Image (tube, rainbow, N blue to C red; front, side):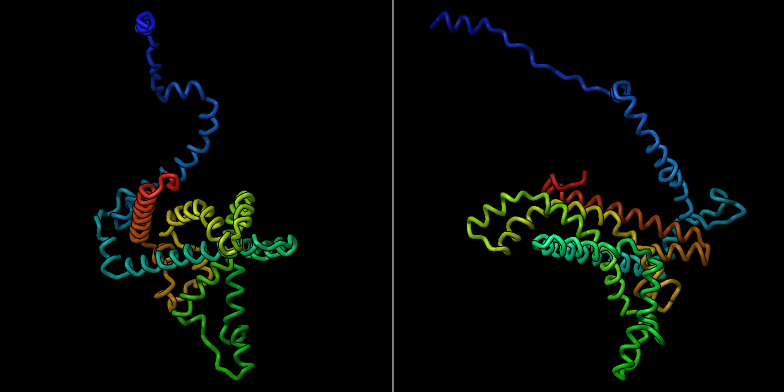
Length: 324
């Protein structure tokens, strides 16, 4: 026994391997081909995303063509002050965020429901036909959407008013009634994008192993219990990732949708004007570059803070679902 203890004392354990942290230059020399392949992407973003940030200075100037960017009079925060005091900034923020919240909640919610219902259909022909019909509007341009909107709600010869006239009812001036567009814009948006979102959730459902459902059937679970305890929990990561992506652009309105459906109809601006359309009109009609840049800068900073905050909260709750 004493000999065994002596032998154990003689054993010298090797020192733990200490891995030295490699620097960027080491990685560059080792994987220079990969960095070379990444170079065009970096150049693209530098030219199109980072160099133009110099234009943020416009938000603090009263732009003058004679002076150019750095020769225009510096006005500090007066552009932001005017937007706030005129009530424009508050109205634009409420409209932009309000519509996007509706788009996100209804868009993802209805897409999940449709995907689950369609996944439970046994007929492959009906399933493929339904997917194609629902996905088709995604490829329709917003210009065509405006044509559909005009032919449906035109006061004199629109489809809706023609039906009302058949029943001896008075026509409705939909195109000039602001409150109606609070309902119409989400309907048009969901009609156009629902198929695309549904396909994403269908792909996630198809990745769920059938073993879970078979085990649940053996335990006596009905279809609603299988959906509640298997399908919905499995869709949770996909839902959260799509939610984070959508929140990243919550201050970026669907410009094509609003501009094509509303255009320059000032009667509807109280309920349909968003930051993107306001910036466009400021540049196209008033050509107030300082005011437009101020609104765009506010939009970007607000959206950045929002996505960072939401991602921080999600990381605290469940780190696996966070984007970064």
